[in-house]
Length: 296
Image 1 (cartoon, rainbow, N blue to C red):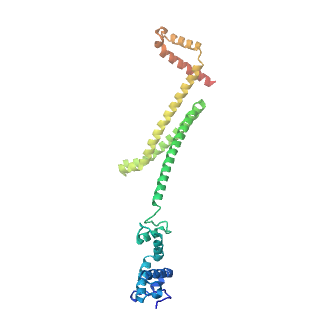
Image 2 (image 1 turned 90 degrees about the vertical axis):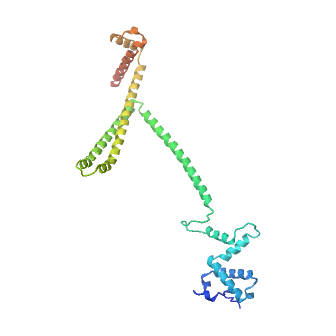
């Protein structure tokens, strides 16, 4: 008779070396498997099966459940889902993919991850957005830098602004000079050791590498500061001259010509001949005029 208590469990005694193998399986899955395998050989009920049929079915079910604990639930689902379907994967192929759709540790890789294409598309979209944002940020930074430069230029259009800027540059230059002096002093120790033969030339170069680099940067910046100061000074001179020029009347121009004549310049040489002398005299007048204005 069939073992109804264990739903026909009739294993090969030679394989039961570690006790009842059914204890390690899902009973419901085992019953489902036994029904499936017995029906496959023509037994519509457990009681109709022979001892040999139950033994073969038992071993087959045990083997399949060892490979996959939900083998028969998946098999029945597979047959139902792909019923009347011409093109379908093999059950083994389909079953191997089912495990990839279960919840897994985030650190574990998926063999057949259905989200791979979507993930790649998201990565590409994010990359494109970052690239666009990067370009926009670069434009904004350039615009801000230009505005800052323009604001800086505008801040030195007045005499007060120019004086303030010159004072700021002088202060920066003073700090840089002090830093350069300190850095050069720091090189005296390694230099003395090199002269005494205590360190090699490569060791001296290595020990002074950073200070040498910084000194070069300071020298470059000091040169920039001098150029900026010259530009401001020149702009101030030209500005004073423009102001003086607007205040020069006809009598003033005639007086400048008289000064040139008194200096021995022949005014009959023509405009080209006296232009250079006239410009020198006019510039001197403008500088003197604005110097007097500033004193007052």
